[in-house]
Amino acid sequence: MQIFATFEHSTYLELAISELEEKGIKNILAVPLNNRKEERKLFDTLHQSDGVSLISKGSILAFLFSTIGITKGFVLEWGPIIWGLIGAGSGFLIGFLIDLFIKKVIKRKQRLLRGKNSEVILIVECEEHQKEHVENILWKQLALGVAELNPK
Image 1 (cartoon, one colour):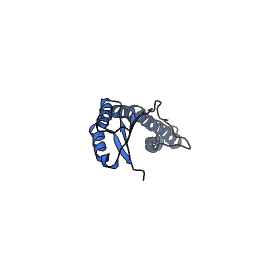
Image 2 (image 1 turned 90 degrees about the vertical axis):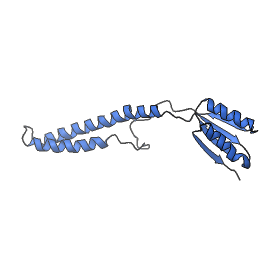
Image 3 (image 1 turned 30 degrees about the vertical axis):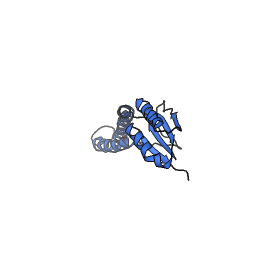
Image 4 (image 1 turned 180 degrees about the vertical axis):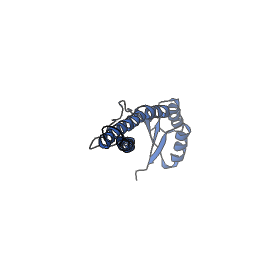
């Protein structure tokens, strides 16, 4: 039976490995992961989308500002059509910039504050009767996740 666990690079990983070795488990493999270094793409392509829209607030504000521009355009010199288009363009631009600011600045800070990245995968081969004990050791040493594979 194989048990997989993910850890951060820390002393807890070393403690888990040494405690497993003390219990007589010798087949232990630790594989370090390469985390993403570059930022995720901001704009979606035809073949890939992350589900985050940068135009939702822009569309709403374009509608609102164009409505205001049309109503005020009846009084102003250029007329309702031109002021409606100006309002739609400026509303879309303001909404797009708000979404862009939220995605680039605020969400990035939240990701950095959360921090917990899986950095090492620990693979432990053990007998069926040792499974519960191995999982308890891994959870006690602050594993980020634990899974088991029972090849039968």
